[in-house]
Image (tube, rainbow, N blue to C red; front, side, top):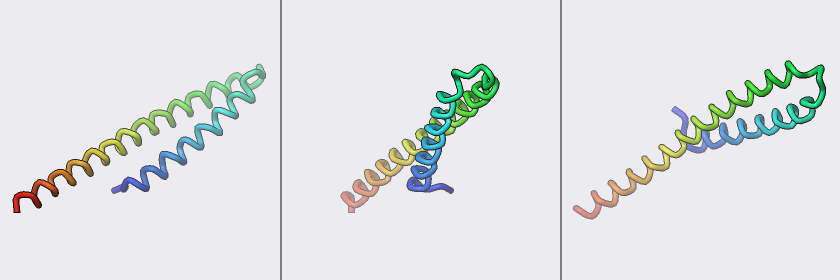
Length: 80
């Protein structure tokens, strides 16, 4: 099971990889010899974007669960 900090590290690492891919795409996109390379890199960037979106959703769910746990804990303490 991945905790919130590990998920955040994975998110940053993936965003960093995407930044490098965008730079590579920008650099070679104007050269006709690299048309196929640009297509492949674009697919890879889309895959990374999907991973980022999933990680962000998971991180958002962790924050909600933490808030719910704190609320339940405060409620339980108030009834004692």
